Length: 280
Image (cartoon, rainbow, N blue to C red; front, side, top):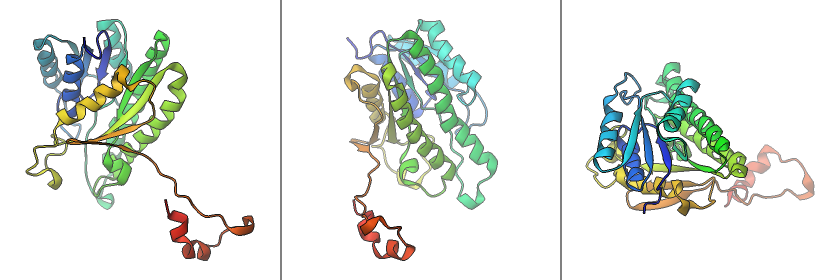
């Protein structure tokens, strides 16, 4: 018996890296998987069916069930067709894993509008569109479901040269929190992962040079947990994974300080009381 026996799962961006590891693990636990990937370069340019087809072949060779889908997450039509692929092939949808992404890194002052728009379109808009399309299907089925998004340390803490990527990933955090609130009444949990792994998206970054312990296979079990009954009714969480370390990200509110008499603060008073205002 697998944790996902009888469940139908869509994994976007599953042609390689983290998405591939997720799709293979979910399939090994009994899920029927739609492997979505346009097959472009890591900057989003181009398209090739080979990547998604290869993952489907791997899953089927291991005794699992999977079909490929090559639509872009960045359009409403593409998101609809991704969900439709699950319903057409397997009759339903139970879990959506939003993993698709591209990178076009450049420092803030050198970034073009096109670099900004393309990354926002795939990561943030794509997560919104696929979440919306999947939620409509899950609500129509009336049996609940699970959505797992992918944010990033870059979005939660910031990272040099990734203003577009960080903004998109920070947006995904906010989207996750809001969707979790709105979809809870439909028994749809919405959580996110914040992975650190060496993939083709990251293997040229200095922090990953000479490191072989931050693999996509370390990330996949977190997604399996969030996609499975083990997650129960937990929703709105960000589960971070860095190699063998697993932890959670939370927004923490400082204790703050009240000004006597309910008076308006002055800028000088804020400066004088900065430590008290910001102490957690």
